[in-house]
Image (cartoon, rainbow, N blue to C red; front, side, top):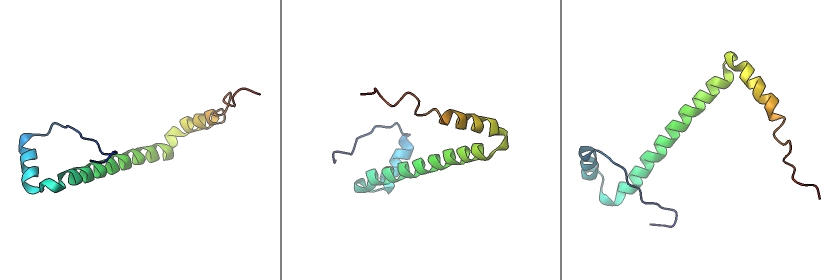
Length: 84
């Protein structure tokens, strides 16, 4: 294991794990699980991006988007630090 590799423990049904272990050779299991996790992350992120896009383009949310823009102009207010 390298410095940026972690061990993890997850509960998986016995039958699923036994089937996985029977099909995927021992030297490939971590890599295969990591690939599955990466694909799951991509899928979840795409779902969230689709939700955000739908919200941003829905005319029913126009007031919320206008309110957000009104607040955005205050982002730097009071954050300039002490004057020297």
